[in-house]
Amino acid sequence: MNEEQELRDRLRAVDVPASRIEIDALVRAGRRRTFRRRSFQGAGGVALATAVLLAVPSIVTRAGAQPGAAPATGLPAEATASARPTVTADGSRPAGGLTGRCPVVELPVPSGMKDVTAVGVDPAGRYIIGYDVVGQDFRPVLWTDGKPQALPVPGTSVELSAVNADGVVVGVVQDARQEYVFRYRNGVYTRLRTPQGNWHVYPEPAINATGDVVINAEPQGNSGGKDSIALFWKAGSTTAVKLPLPDGANVFGITDDGTIVGTMYRNGIGIAAYAWDRQGNGRKLKAPDGETAAGYAVRGGWATGGLWPSHSAARWNLRTGEVTQLAADGPGEAVNAAGWVVVNGSVLRDGDAAELEVPDGQTSLARAVSDTGMVVGQARAGGRTGENLGPRAWRC
Image (cartoon, rainbow, N blue to C red; front, top):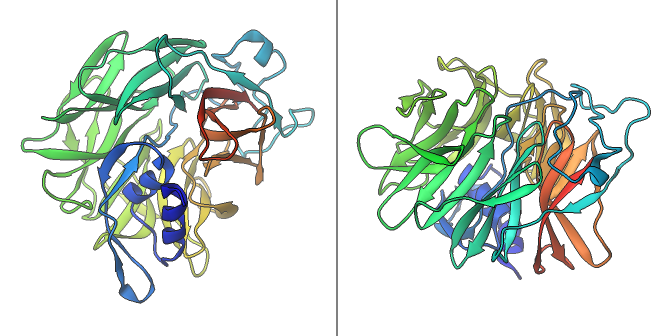
């Protein structure tokens, strides 16, 4: 049994939400980077130790253009001639829009790179981020209008996590001595400073259209989010501000208007999904009867995450407070401004999985979706654990 399937089976056995770090490990399973992770408890209070798993970046899409704007596709013209945004703010498709089939384009890769995956896309669909895997380390890649560029590597490993419509990329640099959050723009890395002391940042930074950045940090030597804080860097600033959130709050996404979505944890266990403003005023996001929710991503008026014990995905309309339990195995990992949700390699729109076309004998794995309907990810030979055939993009 591969490690991803093993972890999925173990998570199904518990009745409470896993931490975001555990979910990242699930999404990232099959790659080689290690993360400290929370332990979590199953029914009856039995602790399940899950100290370290092999992992790769998860996907978070945030901030940018609204559905219905003319798309900057980032793809060859033949792939986009008939593909235009066909979604509205409520997630529906207008009459005459595209069908459920999404044509695929193979993304070119920089010379010498052999194990490349696309992991994120800006809301307007122009910029795509990804990585090549070399041993246990990541080598960052940025596509602009479909043209790939291998970015500089200022440390042992560079993990890109998100990009906004202005092409500002955020991520984490790691080497044997340090790790730090960065912004990258126009060929320049800018280190974002944490408060005084030694901090471990996790799971990855999120950025909005303005360029504001959020992430969590825990003191070096701690694990599972013990004594963690939520950090905010205003656009253009390199000095972190500690957000005035309750103890146990972890943040995972920020909208253009500054709404922050995340999860409240108690003793390492997720107890509720939340939305906060920058002043720390929060509201608990609804969960269906008998379920406990965790919030993992946000875009525009929509948020997504997971529900336990059903181990299904949730989508919240932040304007109305309505929660929708999605028929999907696993939590929502990313969402666009139309409410399309990425879950376990699939994209759900109008409650149905979009058909991400690949040739016979290949399997598609979605990682992120733009507001313009561009889906990015990878193709694999055979099933989900087969050979990586490289980065792909789909127009939906």
